Length: 262
Image 1 (cartoon, one colour):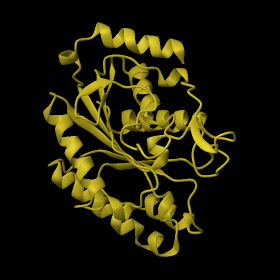
Image 2 (cartoon, one colour):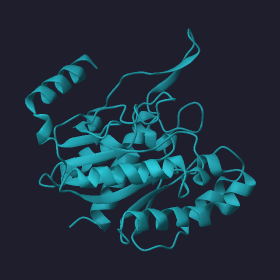
Image 3 (cartoon, rainbow, N blue to C red):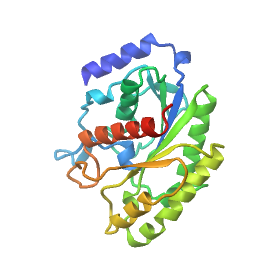
Image 4 (cartoon, rainbow, N blue to C red):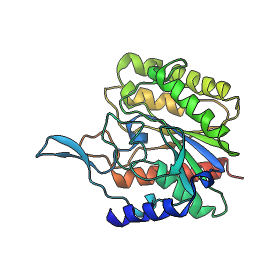
């Protein structure tokens, strides 16, 4: 952790702020498993959730991976990536950093990646509908990211649905998700925006299968999916552990390169 901290200081001192401009932008949205809970544990002494501070090599910071801070400036990305956005929760390792490092490992000339964290834990798809706080924040940050650089939005990465596994919410999920995707594309004036959606493997309720079926049957252009089923979870049986957060991030990267990489 100490070496990681020193590395980040060195990199930030070596790069002027005005030079921090990404070529390829990715939107990260959804709930806690996108925000990242890898390495989060319950401290029995304080009875509080804490992050263990362990950063795997697949999540290493580099000047080629930037993040859009809450104040709408670019900086070098580091874990926990969503600490400013999902700030009422304890964040840990998520898919964003391993996604980026996997792309750069496979496409060294891909250019600087700009991540736009927008995920908030515990949120239902209803809370992401057009006009809501979360929707407006996502679209607003996406526009700032695009306008502040010469880069294009490469894809929206979406990981959400665990909070919609109750009976009624699960029945309405497919329609709400399709509307959300269509509205985002329309408001970003990007009708063909690539969307990579994670099919959830756990949920808060008895209707996980309904939500999974809805996600697997989304039939919109340029929407592809990766499946989280089979990945290992924290003891809460809901959140991905660090190893699985890295794995799903790498799967998202492979999916992007296979489906949308030029």
